[in-house]
Length: 316
Image 1: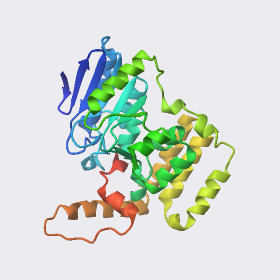
Image 2 (image 1 turned 45 degrees about the vertical axis):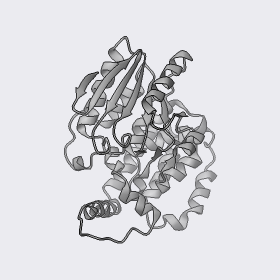
Image 3 (image 1 turned 180 degrees about the vertical axis):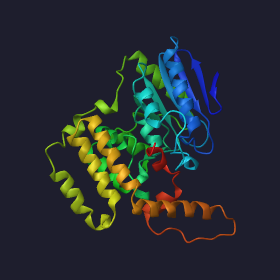
Image 4 (image 1 turned 90 degrees about the vertical axis):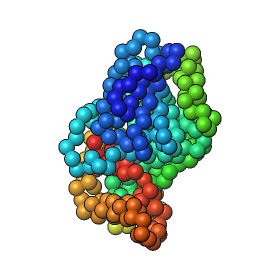
């Protein structure tokens, strides 16, 4: 085992390189994690003994979002996009091994891996809408390419956490492995990828599902109409929808630019600022032993208050 930095290790098992993150409590995308990922993948790619790479996390979850303590501060180390580019452009297959909740920026990292395996108890989602934002690290452009436009619209506008079996059925996960045996199952899957000579499946290049919706604006019109009452008065659902439209109608890189523009529009607006304020206030209140608060009334608010701030990862 090689210690890459304080939170990242690289182990070579046979011809499989295993990059392991261990940054409690939720393996958030801090500067140390991003730095560790960048260096670990560079080392694994450069090692001729390594033929495929598994990304796995210690603790209770895969990458579950960003380090909220970094929000509003100057970024140090590699950006999230730099890390994503390194993983996605790896000449060796990369398999994300998922447990716990893979949310926001964490799911956006998993989506640049060539394959995703998970244990049955895992859940994934892009819940940024719950705090008035949208995924800002390619989530709105990659998700519809893998699960289809209709399911992507539902996921980004509801912030729902999709259970592993449903994620497998929609194509978000490639295989489920035995509960409690994720590492061995992911390594076995990596060996299967090599033995079957599977291609480096880049989600950004999977255009069939977005092309199927091209020239069909009625898909978006019907979705807006069906959810008009629920979305009324909120900017984030509409901007999320516009991002999925961009995924359908624009080349991938142009879609990323549209996503960034729409993300910054929300990030600088008063609605998201207010929703983020409530999010932080609820988290702080929960840490006070003598403070008893009334549970949030809506499912979307419950999701926001329990999530580890994936929106901050997107802002990087």
